[in-house]
Image 1 (tube, rainbow, N blue to C red):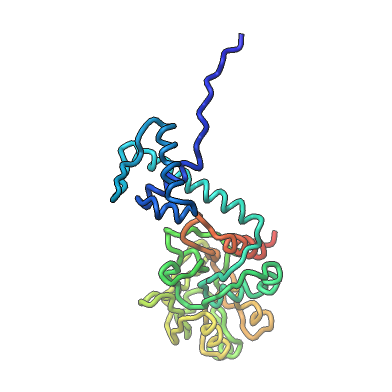
Image 2 (cartoon, rainbow, N blue to C red):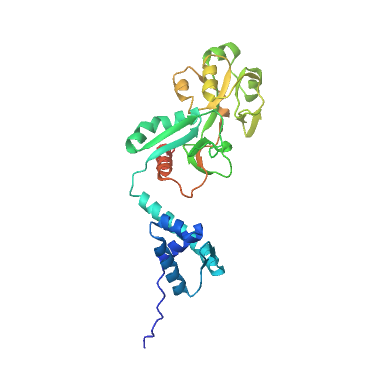
Length: 308
């Protein structure tokens, strides 16, 4: 024998949307403006919802509107659920629309040159409605305070409360020098020989912090306090100074690849190079991530994947 099932009451979604709007404004007229209906329609919908639920949700007079205890409890449940529904709707709709708009990225010149510049023209052809704006600065900035959509820095420079996506291969830092300098000053044979050379240091913060010269000597890894001949705050300038024969520089191998390939710079102590962390694209939260930023991150992460 089939038992009769008790029918569940239909969820009054439209009425809940109206209730949430009224509860937010505590004014029927303002809620009506947002919902693009008349105040009479709003009042009627609330009355029908109260009748269906069997409780009063709002106390209203000619001068004011206030939530009852039941209304407060309903709002606490309904508001987050409706927010999730709206976000789901927007996310689903965004998949059918071409991502568009300005995209502000804070990065260093090194990261821009290695990770973005080689693939930028192809990206712009694929996503013509996205307009990237790169702010190229030596030191990491507070991207939220300055209105950037995302930043790109080595992992050690990314704040812990950020969402960070690896972008490109793990980078190796190497010591380089111009042949003219090395012929004049001699070629180091071991890491401690660097202590007798002119070294170009890079400042990586507004304070006293320098990029450490961390090198491997056998199984030991150490950060050398090398002599400082020149201080610069940008790796591009450090590389240029090394090319000019000022002294030795500590730079990303990939960044110096063209100069190393053409012989205008030489690797110094190549067996002592130390693998460092990768660059990361970082942003404040995955919640409500704009489609333009999502496709930007996916595109350049794919283009910069290490070869296997």
